Length: 185
Image (cartoon, rainbow, N blue to C red; front, side):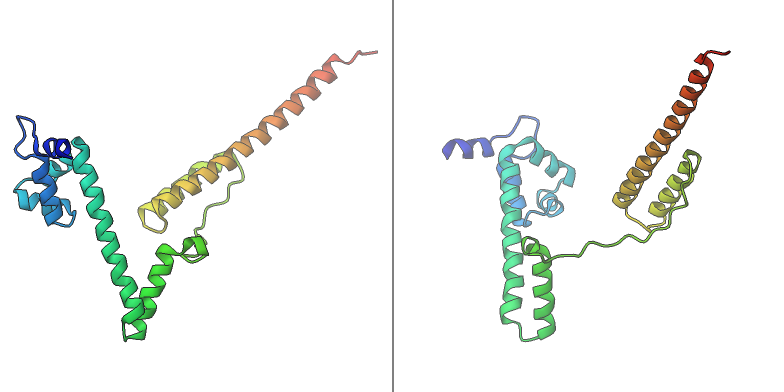
């Protein structure tokens, strides 16, 4: 324990703050890096650098954030149990089940994506489909993750089209070769 405190208290010669000072600032700001930076009168990047450089600062931040989550969860549970406003109780319960009840089947239902792609009848149609996806992401009609998933599906479709085209060429080539190889009488 004493060793850990020495490690936390020690700072590298070129650093303005000790890890212990950064931890104290993070505790004072409930783990909010901007708040810790304001306490220390430095940039948030400096705080982030300490978190990344010192395992004890990183562990302290993780513990602070876990404690903050416990407090927030406690507030929600208190609202569910004690609030006299049924709407607040209902909203708190729905939120809690959505966040914590996934293992019991609660949570957001899968959302069906309604996004119109142009028809892809051949490989030449793929660029149009990808452009539509890019436009959908740019215009916030779909999320970047949905755009990536759609692009993956378009690529699978493209590969299937290429495979069918290659198979047709191979069959035609085999027919040509077999008709040329047949003896003539």
